[in-house]
Image (cartoon, rainbow, N blue to C red):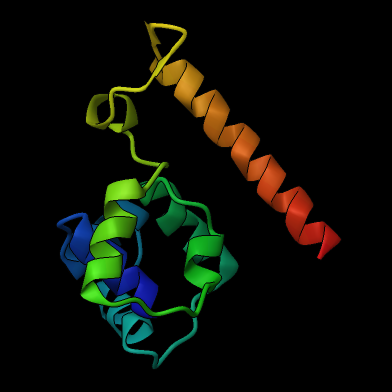
Length: 118
């Protein structure tokens, strides 16, 4: 799967490193990345947990240009370093990590609701 390889490389992991993190055979993970095997939802969920992304990230078949990928990486809201990377303020006060996590949760719920209505 293109998305797994792309995310793994963005996060600086080798196939062996990711395989170790998710307790999975690296040779099979390589086959999944090359499209020779299909991953289970359980495996995708473990990878999503490691990289702090929603599992739907792997189910989206869109491909992006390098410029778009850089923009997406810069705008990734599930990043652990959201509060460090961006200096968000509201009413003159810095938004805390806990508040940012809450905002992300709300956005995900809104997204789910919108998709259900489509």
